[in-house]
Image (cartoon, rainbow, N blue to C red; front, side, top):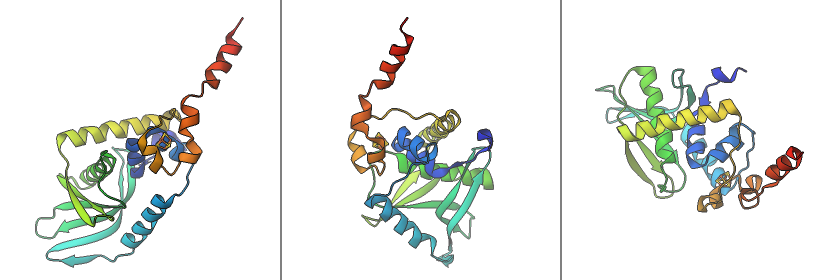
Length: 206
Ligand code: SF4
């Protein structure tokens, strides 16, 4: 397939914002491994996706909605869209395992969902919600100028990593402990591995 025409999955943005190497391992190298966190995530999304559309208090709830935005180059499935039947206002809601994170990778994925809906409907999507399984709380997320720009930057960076097929070097950090690809990535060993440079130097000697 021509890489230029490939629509990127929305999930790749969250993977990239969490760790560019994780994004490349999953989407360029097709590496995947479940840990208890990803297993919880699958279970949660299975439950969310299985709900039927319903209407309550003038709001229609549409679950597991496929979106495709060619200009942005994105595609994916939205957990839930709330539609206000009076105003037509659309609000994306993304379900997450765990609790609100210090990093903004969940917000970037949600904002990208809003941008997809904007491209598809022409409506300005001003906000969304992240619903966290562990805390049973939903967090309001405003799609402000700052978050929109961060999201557009990540879309561009993911596009570049897809086109280049590159695999960034690991950087061992606290978040690596929660990464399902820890064993495949091996960050502590590879971060300081200079064998590639050594081999390069060896063959460049006269
Ligand atoms: S283990 Fe760390 S460096 Fe490796 S992919 Fe996961 S988060 Fe990134």
